[in-house]
Image 1: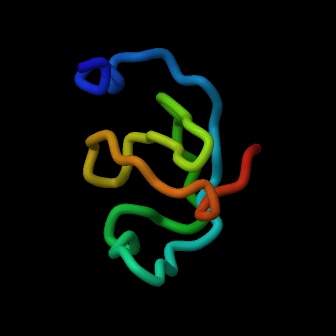
Image 2 (image 1 turned 30 degrees about the horizontal axis):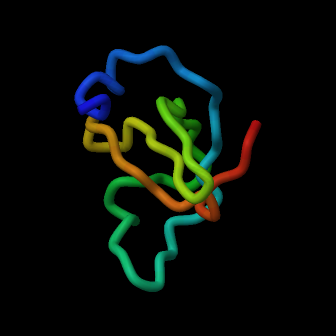
Amino acid sequence: MIHKTWENKETIKQIECVHADAKKFVVHNVLTPGKVYDVKNETEEFYFIIDNTGKIGGFLKDYFKEI
């Protein structure tokens, strides 16, 4: 249950959202293009960040670029 402590975990790096145009999922209400987010955890396909709702969310890496 490590995901329950990610909000308090140290930030790994920062990323910038480049788009919120998802084909399959609704992300435009939780991501803002141009906004910088703190990465709390990362896998091969996903970044886990604190999104606009203030909670941890997992998003595909193609919505972001590393800064």
